[in-house]
Amino acid sequence: MTPIRELDVRQLLKDGGMPFQVIMETIQSLRPDESLRLLVILEPIPLIRQLSERGYSHRSTKLAEDDWEIVFTPQSAAAAADDAGPPASDIWPEPEWNLDLTDLAPPEPMERIFARVETMNPGEVLFALLTPRTGLPLQ
Image (cartoon, rainbow, N blue to C red; front, side, top):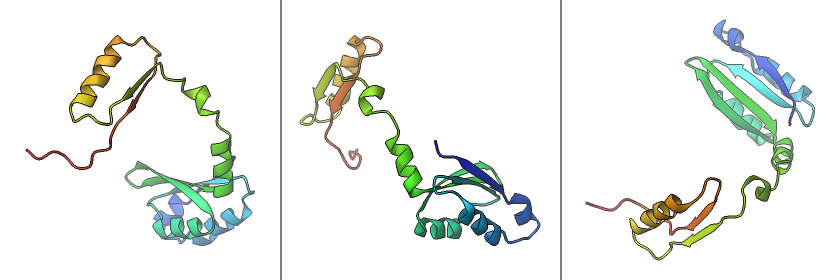
């Protein structure tokens, strides 16, 4: 897990201050594997763009009306965290049921999936291959 440093500039912003300098100093002082949890009163789109160009990914979360959390993570650390997860086979077992529904018109694929699910035991996995459909049928 990536270590996270927190910087809260909400009061500085409410007082009319400009936190850009302190944010950039904090970013520059981060270790290569460290993320920044920035607490602000609005989503800082220009800052997000600038840090994206410098190799940071971000996750924005609106906590309340004037309360945002932005987590900036160096992309190398984000990639390492993604790679550190367990293999998919450890998370999701092999399916007991495989349905190829690619040549069927709606609503038949959904009906077949529901029919199969009704016969399955808890913990069993169903894999259904469907044809992507764009748009909704006109009525």
